Image (cartoon, rainbow over all chains, first blue to last red; front, side, top):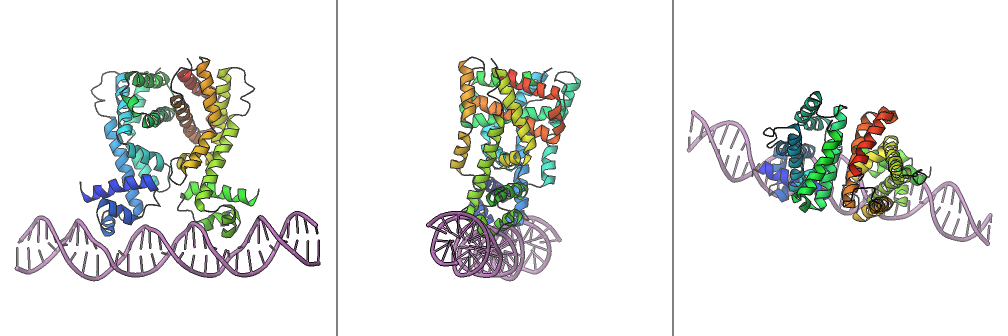
Length: 186
Length: 186
DNA sequence: AACAGTATTGACTAATCAGTCGGTTTACTC
DNA sequence: GAGTAAACCGACTGATTAGTCAATACTGTT
């Protein structure tokens, strides 16, 4: 792991635990095993640091989400694959999920960073618009559909965080996905 | 409005805009039209202040949610009434919703405050458990059902925040509720 | 081996801010 | 109107901390 990565990873953990402003840069540096000067060599300001943490989490999430989706044949199995990927991501990278949960609406994240983050979702928007054209999904405002899916996903992650074993429970996964699918399919 | 309320209300607004730590107590006092000393006369610490803001938002939300629910006859209409109350609350008290969104997972809110907040939901848990016993709702972990409803609600609020007019659109409300109801009813 | 560019260090500083405190005003009681 | 308790004020302070900087250590190139 490079020093840059060590810093990002320590920052993620500490921001989650103490919050942005209650985490001194000196502590981040210490936990990452570097000097404060080094931290500011890689990140001009503390703000830039948290913005980079944010983008790293979003990247990681999107990468995981699309694994194997292209190989699936039907719309239903594509969506199912992506959905389950996301659930696995949330359980496996708890810290990343909690960070996004906590800081997505925080003023520490700049509007331009948030915009950058949104762009990583473009592929999903694309898929949804296509699905509507192909008359697979109910026809509605794509923005609304996105919110629906994300809200659904959030509910499941939140629950799985308390009961991670449920993720291995086939009937739970099936039920959870069916509720989502019935809500969005035509 | 009492000075205490002025302080709470200024704090809510400023915390949303700048975040907890980037809002000096001196600014809160100024916006509330009182001296810093007065702020600390009502709230021992800044932490106590934000915790009180949190509880006030939760109170407000619950009060709104249950308006007229008792008068409704069927389970379906009770749930629908509560659900639409919540949507109205979210659109009307945007600041309260955004505050809860941003600070529910923040370490500035103490565990005991969060517990206190959860107690205000007890009535809802009660209603859900009853509904399961009466075989109206699908039988599942009540925790899961709560998350499902809350996730659903969040998705709709998030969308309505961008398009508040939709709340007056009868077919939108009907569709939105139907999706929820189909997901939870037996 | 000389040079240059980059990485790394941590003591230091200038600014910020939560909370204090001594004093004043207001509201209420007898 | 005297007495008193609570509300209110805002200048002040002690502690904290983001970011600097001058010095040192690497790394690769000619």
